[in-house]
Structures are given as C-alpha cells and as structure tokens.
Length: 267
Ligand code: HPA
Image (cartoon, rainbow, N blue to C red; front, side, top):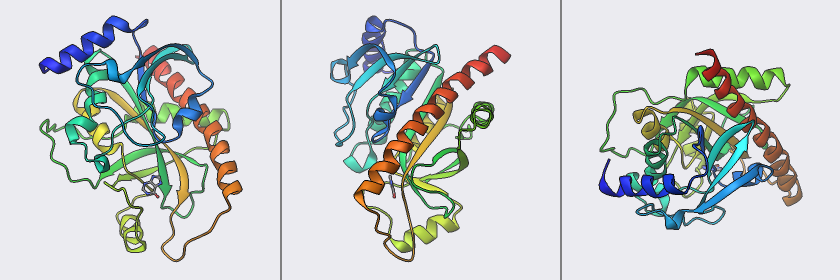
C-alpha cells in the first residue's frame, strides 16, 4: 500500500460504524434503485485523503453505510470514468480503498446499452464474462482471470429464478466513450460476442480480482442499440422503463447480497 492509500483507509476505518461485508459501486442512475435502503451513515468522499472525486452528472460523491438483506454494505454513490480524463489508477482507487479496509466482496453496477437483440430497456444483466476494450495498461498486472465470481453469480441467478425475478446473463464490454457507438461499432461489438456495452466496470473488475475480491457485475439496460436505424422512443416510455428497471435492479442487488451470505454459510 502506498502512503496515501494507507491514509485513506485509516481515515475511512476511523469513521465507519460497521465493518462492511460487501461494497457496492453505484453506476449512473443506480442510486435511485438503492433509495429504499436504511442508511446508517454517510461519509463524503472529499473528506478521504487522496481519493479522486467523480465529476459526472448523475454520480454522487459519498460512501453510504447501510444494511441490505441483513448485511452491512458500503455503497459508493458515484465512480470515475476514463472518458473524464481520469487515469486508470484514479478510476480504480475506490476498489483499492474497499480492498484496503478489508472488504472481500464487491458488486459493480452500471447503466448499459443492450447490443443483443433479445435485451430490452429495463432488463437486468448479470455478466458472466467481460471484454475490456479500453486497452489501458495496468501497473498492477495480475495473472488472475478477471471474471465475475462464478459461485456468487450462480447463487444469485438461482435466487432470482426462485423468486421469479427476470435476469439475464451474458457478456459485457467496456469501451472508453463518452460518445455512443456508431452503427459499425455496434456490429463490431456484436461480432465480438458482447451482449451489452458500457463505459465502466471492466477495469474495476480487473483491479478487484487482482486484489483478491469476489466480484459480481450487475448491469441495467437503459437503452438498446441498433445497427439499422435510430429507434425513437417517447420520453414517457423511457421514464416508465427506467422506473421499472430501478425496481428490478434493487431486487436483483438484494438477491446478490443475500446470495453472498449463502456462499459464506456454505463454505
Ligand atoms: N453505450 C455505451 N455506454 C452506455 C450505453 C451505450 O449505449 N448506455 C449506457 N451506457
């Protein structure tokens, strides 16, 4: 750990009321899905020494302590993106902070564009595989395969099936952005085998796996991508889809947290 990492971890540890079992990174608009949780305490990120701050609209700047499915959870209400001009180290600093305070499980959430024609707005995807198209070199190269944790993913899918909660699995690709994909890029990403595309997560997942954290990715499909035409959707339809997605997203996150407990009890 560097000096500033140690200071950040010590600062946060001195303020946390509980030791979080799971950390969650809330992507664009996802905080709405977590609005119903009981908040124990909120810690502004700008008080944490050396922690870079999110600057994008729709992203918060705090760490929220709360309880989900009886588990103490720490939620980052925003993240940094490569398209903001942040370095890889800045983007992954939150993941490092969670690892440094001893949190061994992480849920990375994001807003995502659906590439697979079977995906619709409001669907929730739990990726089994990721493709990193950011091509950034990490100073912390790890030989570990950076994939979402298979037992955790399967346990979550099983729980969702048991409660008739529709969720899909597939492949998520991270691009740098910030522009949305051209039709040619949509065809290329589909040809590569990607089902959904976003501008975050893969690099954080890599870092989390390298730090030994069990990690799950939870993607909310906010729009679908087509390589033939621009499909116009009414604003009301989008709002309606987003609020339905929010509800589903919060239920999937709750099942994911509970599934992590199931795994701990089994092992
Ligand atoms: N493309 C890339 N990132 C995204 C999209 C998209 O269509 N939707 C939400 N994040």
